[in-house]
Structures are given as structure tokens and as C-alpha cells.
Length: 387
Image (tube, rainbow, N blue to C red; front, side):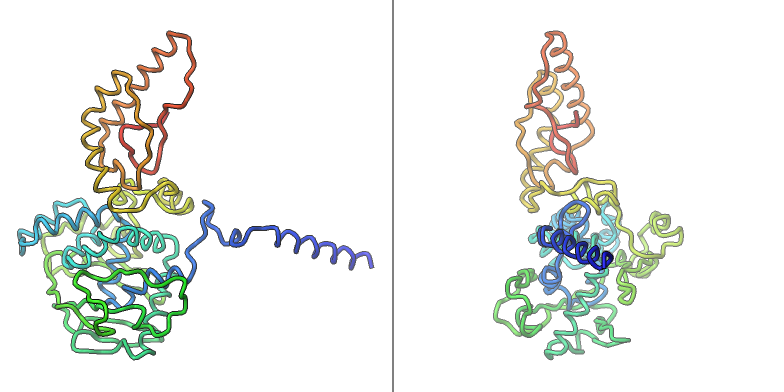
């Protein structure tokens, strides 16, 4: 009888504790932010889930390097008439991740990702934290589009089902067609009215057009030599083979990438934090995995990079003089991309200015109030440094 009473007492307290926990707290990441809900994954993936596998995998990988996407988009616009060997050599000189370089072959897609930078970064965050969920969501959306009669084999693409996996391939390996469609129509009744699909349409999309159509085909060129990703749908990840598309571009030094993939140039895709270029990660778990900062303070927008990175370069040049005269930073905080390309000289001048102020403070016998200090972050932030 006593055992039964103890069990009832335990169950009552268990219920009390469960009801006291705030909703959703049990599903949170170590950093306190919840993982992306299924409706959020559907929302961000709906506009690209029907892209050919080869292009989709490049987008997913490249989305984890949002700053490089912006840089590549600008570069592609400035060099839109460059082709052949000249383009191949120019691309090889760029410091971007191969997935980002590959998208130079699709300037409209690159522009779409750059202009919707907040969506691109969110997609990358989801792919880093929930890769299997992202891949599974793509398959679920493809099944809905197929059931609605809006995903089928055409002269532009081949749609096939292998072991319940829907694969989308280009009809010709030399030309890839990018589909354009309205996600609110092509999938049938949308299951999450509170989470409508993102407006992630390519440039030139006309609302009210056919439910599913194609823009002009894009011939694969030098940039597509960097398209090494292949969807491993059953494994829920992306496989890399750096020897893919060798015949498309022979100007690539592929040996640089062999070490990253078991010394063989093959293996499961690995995110390279160096190409993140100081952009904060969304949650603490991902940040710790790649030894980087989180993005709790980040304003995820392209303007944060475009407007303030240039200002950061100008301020970095004046940093030494400002710090030596004891001037303090205004203390304003910017977005995720603020000051990401400022060099080590700004950090060094910050240290010299700080040491000078501390020396002056010590000679006067005063204490620092801490109000005008510097705070660290996920990436370089102007001429602020760590105390």
C-alpha cells in the first residue's frame, strides 16, 4: 500500500513539473533557441524543393556561407561577360567555397539568394542544425507536388521514383532548367496557413503565371566545375566527390580539397567555418561545433553587410590614430555582417589604444567604469576588441 502511495505521489509531482515548464522549452537547442519547427522548414524549402537535385544541393551548401553569396553575386554582375578559360582562371582565384563558386553558373539563382539574404541565412542555419530534417522535408514537398499533378517528367527534366525517393534530374547533362512556380499553388492546399512559403522567386517571375514552368535553360560552364555535391537522400545528407565535372573545368586545383574529405576527395559534406567569414551562427550548439559565436544579436540582412562593411574598412584605416588619441567607439551594435572584412590592424590598434587608456587611468589612480568598453561578438565588429 505504501508503494502505491509513493507512486501516486511521484506521478503528481511529475505532472506539476511538466505543467510548470514553459511551452517548447523541452525542444530547445543548448543555446536556448528552439530547433526549426516542421512548418518553418516547409516554409523556407517550398520555393526550391522542386529544383533539380544537382542545383538544390549546391544551394543548400552555399546557404551556410551567406557573406560569400553576396560577394559572388556582386562579382558575377561585374564579370557577366567573362567566359571560358578566362572565367575559369578568375574563379579559381576567388576565396569562396566551391558550392558558392558553382552558383556563378546560375546568376539568377545567385541574385535571388543575395537579395533574400535573411531567408538564405535562415536556410543555411536549418541545414547546419537539422540536415536530415531538411532533406526529408524536400522529399515530403516533392511528394505533395507530384500528388497534385504539378511535378512530372518534361522535355526539360526527368522525375523518377527510386525506393520511395523522388529524384529530379535535368533531361540533358549539358543544360539545366531552373523551374519557376508558385509554392502556394503547386503543392495543393498548404498545410500551414500561419507559415506561408517565402517569396523566394527568381528574378523575372510573374505572379499569376502557370503553376509550374521553366525559365530559359542554362548551359553548364566553367563555374559548374565546382558542383561536387550529390544528394544522399536515404542517408539524409550530401555526398561530395571533388572529381565530379572534371571535364567541365580543368583549371581547378582539386588537390586543395582532398584533405577535407579523408584525403580522397570524397565523403559526406563538411561545413567549413572559415568560409563563414565571421557571420554568427544561430544557436549555441552549432557555434560550439565550429568554435564560433552565435547570432543572438545579429540583424540578418544584406544591408547590414553592404552599408556597414564599407564603413568598417574606412574606420579601420583611421583606427590607429583614433585609438592613440583615446577616442572611444560610439558603442552602437550592427548586424551579422558588420565589419566582417576588417583586418588584424584594426584589432592591434584597438589593443594599443586600450593599453594607453589603462596606463593613463592607472597613473591617475582612477577606476574604469566599464561603460565605454569594447564587447566581443561572432565576428569582427569595427575597431572594438576584447577587454
